[in-house]
Image (cartoon, rainbow, N blue to C red; front, side, top):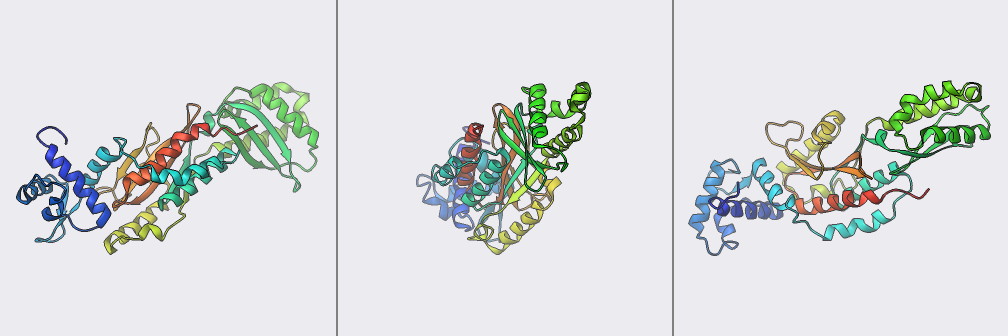
Length: 340
């Protein structure tokens, strides 16, 4: 939209959307006049009329002010948020939480999603979809008191932990040997490679592996469970999200909560191929996210995309605040690799 001819329209659009986000009051030429002292109210009114005809605003009543459409929010996001004009205040709320991370990769990601939700008051969605591409560094099988076992897979992005069944007749020494054997054959290989080749490796081992072949198969089954797409929604402050919203916006937000229950639709909306923050703002043509917005970003560790983290909220929200928090988290996650 922005060129020399349309710069004034663009500036008015950005200020109008920003004011509406803050106040929820319909936009009028008189209300914008204080921001554009060198432009007359009549000119601002004409520009608002033009922006309305272009689809950026709609009138609440014939003689009333205007409210932004999805098209206006998208222009606002592209101009203000994606250009890098982010807030620092909200980042401070998540820095200390980030530094208190766990060694477990999956536990850490879940904790960060919860604290991101707490900092922004928005539901946070974590979709793990790329663990299969992580490189194995070490494998340990630790027997537990209840005769199950804990599978620890140290990777180039941290430790993956998963419970697994264990035959009560398996000795602790067998668990150690199996872990060492798997590490020897699959160190520096991806988890996906290990799953695809674990049966062949066991078969070639012959009599050496007969006594705990079932144990090795349980490892494979546990890893298959790990690499499946995992979908998790956390909503730390559900009531705070509704603060300051009018009844129409509250109704739309309720529809958004229903949308979050549809795992397939949410995963479909998240752009897993995006390399940076990606915004989707619902409109009348998209029933999945109607009345709401989603911003998502990839989680990349050591160059490997392993998950996507998203925030979902109403259209009228402090985009700079939520984008700042999300951008900080995904920008720092590359340091998540835990201690051995």
